[in-house]
Image (cartoon, rainbow, N blue to C red):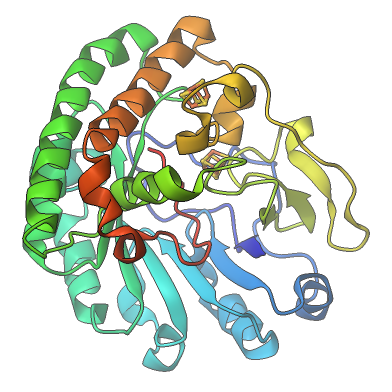
Length: 337
Ligand code: SF4
Ligand code: SF4
């Protein structure tokens, strides 16, 4: 089980595609005691999340000192990573750093390329997974940006999430971009397979995750939100997915009384022939049709293209089944962009 602990809804960055949490959705600091948290999570894994979790480093350390979690994971924008003591740094199994690829793209959306890259380089030997966690938006060229990250030789893995559905542009604008994105994915898969058969595995999370699903299949969204992964808001509420604390269906209980609600995936996902490869992609996407049915289908077209591009190499992938298996433990990666 993975518990995503929201240390604060506050953030020290103003990324173009992220509005952050609206004021009033949850308190700025954790309201429950660390002992109450320990009683609820036991020895499960804990991922620190925000807002920006490193704004609450002292609380994070207190939790790490008090709870014997199976694994600790950190999802950060990387700005304050240099402030993290080595003693704590070395206890993380996975650190996900928001990083968008080429300098002009990262600067356009986030504006802190040099600092974040320097910080990532500084910690690259900490001993766990160091994942470049991209947001793929309209300025992204998925082939070029992933290739750039691979060329940096800093991150152990690359992962991305498409900026869709709750974006600040329309489905129509997204539609134009999807064509190039899908072509970029096909080009990237071709490159990835050509390297794999030569013995070099580039750890591209969506590719490894779909390859794993070819042999194992998903029963629910690969992020496991609401099934094996739960978020804990600063007021102690338990959420299926960390990003929408305002939605009723997403609130499942609290750390004092436990989880008292179960969620199902809605149609069309359970009956879709791609379900075993994508698990419905994302709980939020499955339940909230912010772009209507057409927008839903458009995003699905990216999933289907990704799966089909990899299925074309099913025979080759069979030979690397064990090496490709991902994730080996839940670490907040959504797997399906
Ligand atoms: S491809 Fe789309 S409709 Fe099919 S399971 Fe995935 S998210 Fe659901
Ligand atoms: S993939 Fe969707 S359901 Fe899962 S954590 Fe992300 S937004 Fe939430």
